[in-house]
Length: 181
Image (cartoon, rainbow, N blue to C red; front, side, top):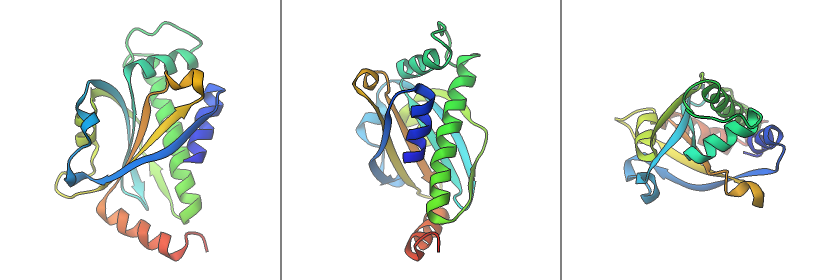
């Protein structure tokens, strides 16, 4: 997570941190805050040692703020259209790649993200659509992104990692072996 935070900090030229907010199994239902309002989701399938997916969620105001910061204060009308859509997908790609690279380094495995897809929906809909399998429960890890005081109001984002059940077993085995030998 530290690598992902550093990548986003470099992009925004401001300190950003990422921490684990909570963890749950997808068959246990969704947290209460997932039913309120629409948001943006940048989803990347993940394959390799970890099969599943990674979802970066942003409030629409956060997506607009990020787009304006990275596009040089260009007024952004439609976040799903160009150039804002590509900018947000690239942010998701950078964060996902850094996040997975960190797991790769720590656990001596290889997981690669697929090209990002930008979606607008409620958080509950995004979480349901992005699970690797509807027939099998998966572990969901939610992290929070935080910025310094002047950025904190604008940075309303979270990362959800959805490893498939078989990937969780493999990850636990690798953690128990101590990652890199």
